Length: 171
Image 1 (cartoon, rainbow, N blue to C red):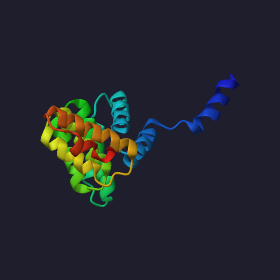
Image 2: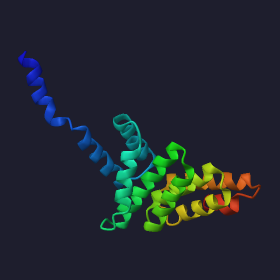
Image 3: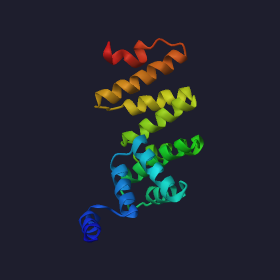
Image 4: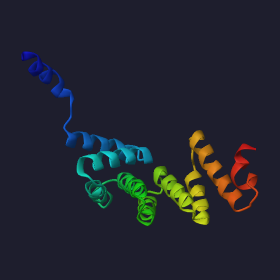
């Protein structure tokens, strides 16, 4: 029976406690806030706690902590927006994304999250404005194309000519 004890001694240093892993996951998500990162945090929180309350509480604490950088606070608001969106609480998700944009207008993830939420909710005019804001200064060709396609689809829904407003950069 020495083998299980030896295996535990070898494996234990590499396995983080659930709390330590959650902290690491949160730190990674704050560095690159996205819907995917928020989904992973959401999944882990529901699995461990049976709900989203602990994650929401932690993100709100970070978002309201004025001792943190604006980018970190906006990242917390962005992650909270994605988590609330996953819960189907669109009004509160929109508020979180809007707070992210106010706290740090340069954090693209907040601007993109707001645009996508408004688009999904059918708020066409605000979505168009949010997409335009998200495209400002964008240097990621793949994301730019994705956002311009979304803009074009909104314009088509409104019965407008799309080449001038959305695809002009590619013509």
